[in-house]
Image (cartoon, rainbow, N blue to C red):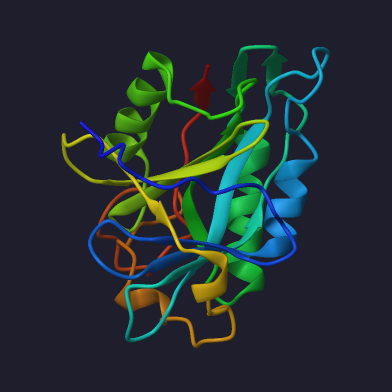
Length: 217
């Protein structure tokens, strides 16, 4: 089970949000990305759950990862107070467009969604959805899962296999160093090769990553 002995990350979005990764390195969520997600925090009873995908970079010669962009709710998504279903097509188009626009450095990194609670805790539906994504989505071997509560933001890191994703430890504000300007890895060195349909080991080169539909609760 995930380690729960972790300090909290209060939602101050004036600077990047940085977490210590499970096996070394850092996960940085850009301040503008955090601000975009913050718009959907369920701090009022009429607000429905929201979510999307995380897009960003693996940094060269490090285990650091930066989330530069997110998708937000789109047409076809289904939103309720305690349930969010993310339709695949439009979010996948955004993944592909980010990949092409960046020259193959901005890729699919995981998922985010909101919870109508102060300190967000993954539901049984969340755990099942995350495990499914780790097994069946096309990715670089690691995915991140972010949940925004009304007061805190929490992140988990999952790897291909059957071990549950691990909750990440936030870095204290005064110890943070912005890593967004560092050099990104070339795409062929960091992501499984696939063709445009998502088939593994294609000689046609690396791809943007493939995300299935997402259900959270």
